[in-house]
Image 1: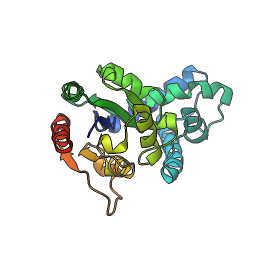
Image 2 (image 1 turned 90 degrees about the vertical axis):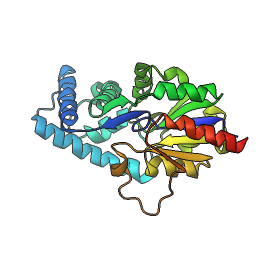
Image 3 (image 1 turned 120 degrees about the horizontal axis):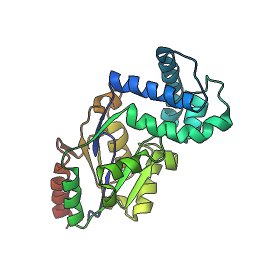
Image 4 (image 1 turned 60 degrees about the horizontal axis):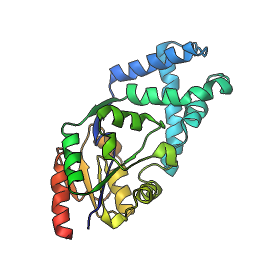
Length: 252
């Protein structure tokens, strides 16, 4: 019996993409923020961008190797901005603000059409709803859900930045299950990547994985070989309700 539907955030509930305009805007805003706090990087926009990109590559090695997520204080002070001689006592209190800015400026984010209607249908079926998201900020996902007007649909929001585990690590799914008070065989997971969402939910023993492709799907799944396939593929997030309704009929 299906009792619970859990969603990925970026690429699933919301469309997400990066382009040259967002890359430029995020570096300009980072430069402005640092200078406003008396921490001038002393670099041209091009040089600052190169330094930040090098820092993200350093951090990617760590989080990819162990499917872990560090706190924003560690990410920005120990990896992204480590080449600068900023006083830690001055930088650390600002790291979450930087992380939040980066998540909403480096990435374009737009709620997919008919998400509220889809969530309403699922709620009307008596299902519990939640979110499991990889994110390098503590509060951005909560704030985005509020801004989209859909935070109230979700019983729980589990984040990699809070748990310390990144999808596809089984532990982040287990934390969500405990908080939702649901068993994995009762759960459906909806995400946009095989590498994080399908593999992770299947390893956790979920009843079914639904995949909707996003602009980042190909990039995130590029290096996969012999990976499991989603149980269902959809093109419109609204079709989640249809698939779940079919699953409910099968498991009655």
